[in-house]
Image (cartoon, rainbow over all chains, first blue to last red; front, side, top):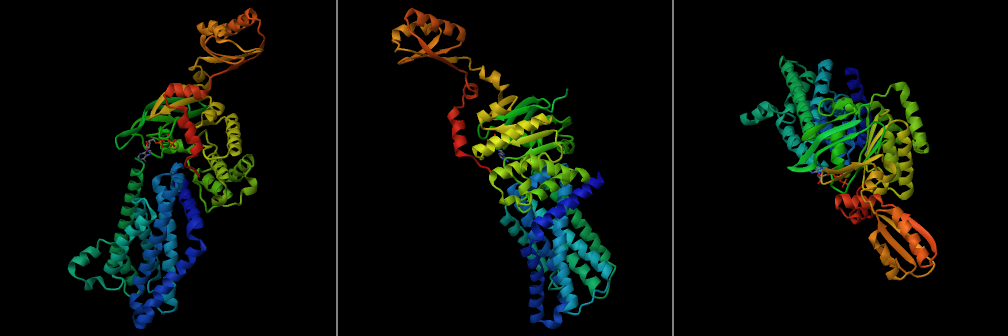
Length: 243
Length: 321
Ligand SMILES: Nc1ncnc2c1ncn2[C@@H]1O[C@H](COP(=O)(O)OP(=O)(O)OP(=O)(O)O)[C@@H](O)[C@H]1O
Ligand SMILES: [Mg+2]
């Protein structure tokens, strides 16, 4: 059964990548988006880029995962293609894991491009590569699960976009992408700590800029918990839609 | 032999309104069972419950030996579904779509290609296997969707309005394929607005109106609900109404020139009476014709839904893709 489930997840990923993500326009957006983002910040403040790069990698992951994935899921709901999957002898959780993983792969591609830009052109060093990769993988998975949760809770493609923006923009400002969380007023700091991106930015910063603290373990645990929560909630919502 | 489907008190409420209202029925193995009813009768909702796309509010059903409330994944394993709209993946080719379906249904790797190849050949889709699904015509999309429902060797196939929106030729060829399917031992459950389609294809028909089953029977016995037949005789010279009056004991009579039309339950006496009439008045019978009641007549009688309603739907085409 486990094998069947893993196989199904894999086939859903393959199908989604082929049918949606790996279309030329999406690939080129996936490369252009981080390039433009990087360029915008280096031109403005060339020396500050290194400091910003973990935040920008997290931001690339955020947009990379949530934007396309929400479209894919709501589109499939709209045209009835998601029902195809629901007719198959696989669980709703399997379907969602397939969707989340394919979104995460696309997000990883974009965040990876951003990472390469920051290493290649800005001379950044990834100081703890293994831990950095773990942090990045958890980041794209968690954010992708958030995207799936948003997508299953709405009907239309545009609603998914609007609702994602409710999360995305506050996260960019609150989660330490541009401004360290510690520099913000206390209430905002509290708010920042219920948002997953905060832990991503912190984990990416620690693993790419020198000093890994014990805190990393906490970040990673938080990301895993967010991931599981989003997956469970999304599965519940999808199940509820059958009633 | 166990039934393919056993529904008991299956019910679905949408906002307190019953879309499907405590329906019970059995579908035998290897039969073609039709759900016939007007728009909004609850046909699609019934299928959606039976295949696990929506949970019943009350009641349950055993499909292929498993309770849909408890073992829906087991049900899904051997059930194929052709939804109201052909909803495969536009961006994938015909071949890729079928391959994806065979994978989702865990068809063993070594069997996938042979199964898909033989389905594509049966459905005359082999030449289009590299076409993107989105680029196919409605009729071809429908055929691919039916093929996709068979890729995993299903025991039961559900078809929601398989021919709605197809032209006469495509509809006929699809019906031909459905009839072929039956020979392979598959149970077919289909819904339709088309009375003729139900008549041609189905072993048994359930008529569903407002979420309730009005009648389940074979097309033949349904027609016998309308038990008057029309006996029409044409003579060599015009008939005076007065002469025909003698036939009225047998049923309603219509006279039109040389033609007498008799609406009767007793065909045998009607023919006898016509023969006597011809002898007594030295008239020659030129031809006799009898028409059996149509399923449409039966439908109207059973449901009170005017057949015009069904006709209008047909012409309106409906929503399909
Ligand atoms: N998701 C839903 N939410 C609310 N009401 C619904 C839903 N699905 C169906 N209904 C209602 O349930 C009733 C039965 O609908 P259903 O689609 O089963 O009819 P049908 O017999 O398939 O009709 P058609 O011939 O038009 O396809 C209708 O009144 C419909 O409006
Ligand atoms: Mg319907």
